Image (cartoon, rainbow, N blue to C red; front, side):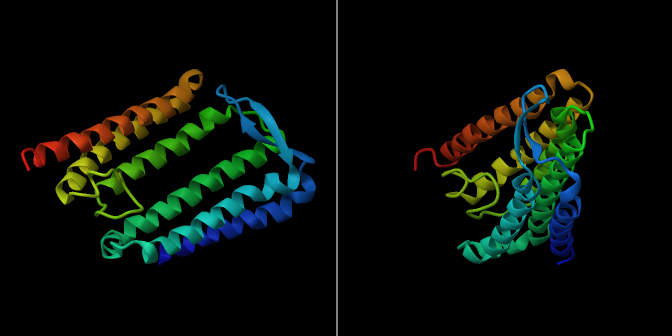
Length: 212
C-alpha cells in the first residue's frame, strides 16, 4: 500500500512540476535524442510537459487493474510486494526521464543516453530481483508458451532470467562511465538475454516433456 501511495505521489508531483514550470520553459521542448545522446527532435511545450505524466498515470491505472484480470490472480497476490515495486520502478523511471527532459529544455548540457544508463541499470537489476519472485501468471514475467504451460519451466526460466537481467543491469551501469558505447551497453545485453531466455524456456520444456 505504501509503495502504491509513493507511486501516486510521484505522478502528482510530475503534474505539479509541469504546471509550475510551464511559463518558464521554451515553446518547443526537446523530446528525442539520438544514439549519441544528442537532441534531434522537439515537441510543443504542452505535450512536452504533460505527455510523460499522462503516460505514467495511464500505466499506474493499468497496473492496478491487471491483478483483477489475470485468471491466475492468486499467483500475482503471492508476490504482491514485488509487483507494487514494479509499478514504483516504472513510475520512478519515467519521472527521472521527465526531469532530464525539463533540465534539457532549460539549457542544461548533458548526454541523455549516458544519463539514462543509470536508470536502465537500476530498472534491469530490479527486474532481475522480481523475476525470481514471480509465480506463473499472464501479465508479469517471462511469458512464453512453455513457461505458461509448465510450472517447473516457469521457475527454472525465471531463475535464469533473474540472473541475466541483473547482469544486464550491471553492464548498463557502465554506460554512465563510457558514454561512447552507453547505448550498446543498455540494449545489447538485454536483447541477448531475452533471446537466450526464450530459447532456454523451450529447451527446458522439451527436456521435461520428452517422450510424452
